[in-house]
Structure formats: structure tokens, C-alpha cells
Image 1 (cartoon, rainbow, N blue to C red):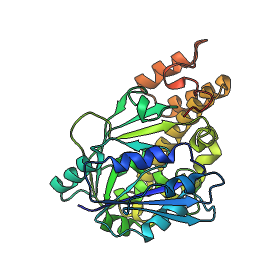
Image 2: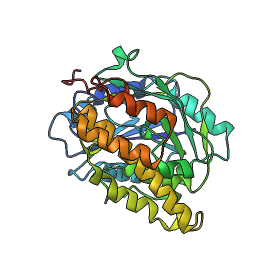
Image 3: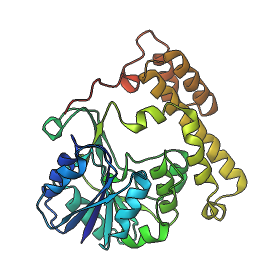
Length: 314
């Protein structure tokens, strides 16, 4: 199976080399990697250009955002399957082989999904650290995806190319949650197959200055994405208006939990607990109730509320 890896890159000079080296180390050899430099102001493009392998190509555009960069990479793509690898993350050596084999043995699946691990402030040399391994979700995920984003990013999904063409391009109007909105569109066309095994295929680098950290702590960041998801015409043929309204309320409760958690991680505990309480009131669960209790204690910045590491190290 031929695989196209599309990597948008903006001011990631300290990290992009790790991403490229992880692709070069793949046991599956039938791949191309398209790195789209999104108007970087640092040495991102220069570093990417140092890798002498005909399977790696570098495209450059004026800064237009991650969705535009992915869409440009798709224009250059013609393989059987596509994987969107962020430039500050990296793959395990067997990632492509495992994902490709899963797609081969699940001919009706639109994509294969593997486990991943979040690793704070680490390069591949420190990959044994970090949080627990997150298992891959599988099956018909549309309803679950409407409530929350089940994927870290596109780096642990191998998507059939013809399904990418069916789902269309990334929404240029979204600056936050653009991947979540895309997964919901993709999920309208079939099921996801989980890879076997427990080891992570993707390592997600948690960076102090990552865009997610700031935007996830602002409730208004979620509104355009939510509108794009729940106003999609394809959903009206799958769900009643009442069901969509119920699912949106669940998603809003999930968003409140994320906002509260991120505010606490940014040192704004009082404001963060307000959003946590609102989330639990709208969608109570025993686990969330226990975490809310923990968040009310003096030492709140542990577990999911732990502080982000400072500063970035490479």
C-alpha cells in the first residue's frame, strides 16, 4: 500500500527533524512525505530541505493556517491512503506497517486508527516518559465524534484516499477544531478499524507554546467549530432535530470540561472549577464527579489538571 504523509509546518524548526526521521525509520517503505511550510519565520523549511530522500518533498506557501497547508498537501497526494502527521510529533517505526495491515484486513473501513501517547517536552530519546497510552476507538464513531474529538490528531489515522476525496478538504474558516470537524465529516461515510496491540504508534509532543493550550481555555474558540459540525447537511439525514440538539448539548458539556481543565492547568483554578461544575451539571458521571471533587482541593494541579511544563526543551 502506498501512503502519503502530509505534514503542515509552521515555526517548528526544533522539532520537524524528529518527525522526518521517524518517517525515514518506518519499516513500511512505500510512502511519500509532503511537508508544507506555512510561511515559517524560522529555519523550518531549511531543516526540512536537508533531508536527501526522493520520497520527501517540500512545498512552501504564505502563512494561511494548518487547514490550507493540509489542503495543499492533498493536492500533491495520489497514494492509496493518507496520514496527517503534525510536524512536532513522531511515529513509532512500525506505525505505517501496522496501520496499512489493519486497512488491508478491514476492507470496509474508511480508516485505521492506532494508539497514541502524549509526551511532554520530549524528543524521541525520551519517548518512554509521558502519559498513559490512549487506545484507539473503532467502529461507527459518528455519534461519539459529535460529542467529542476522539483523536489526538491525524497522526494515528490512516485514511483511504477515496474517502478523503469524498469528505472533501479541511474547512479554511476554522482556526480551532478544524480536525474535529473533518473527522465528523469523514465518519459519515463508514467505520474505523482499530489496530491490534497496545504500543503507541504516535507520540504527541506537548509544547508550552502549542496553539491548543491557549485556545482550549477560551469558550468562544469552540463556537465556529460547533456550528460547522452541527449545521452539516449530511447529519440531517442521519439524526432528527431533537437528537442533534441533544448531542450538541452533550458536546457543549464536554467543551466546558475541556475549558475548565485547561484554565486550571493555566493557573486559573477558580474560573476553571466554574466550567467543570457546569459540565458535570449538564452531563453527570461518577468519574467526572470524582475529578470535580479533586479539583476543589487545594492541590488541584495534578492528574488531568497538572501544570504544563515550562519552558519548552528540545
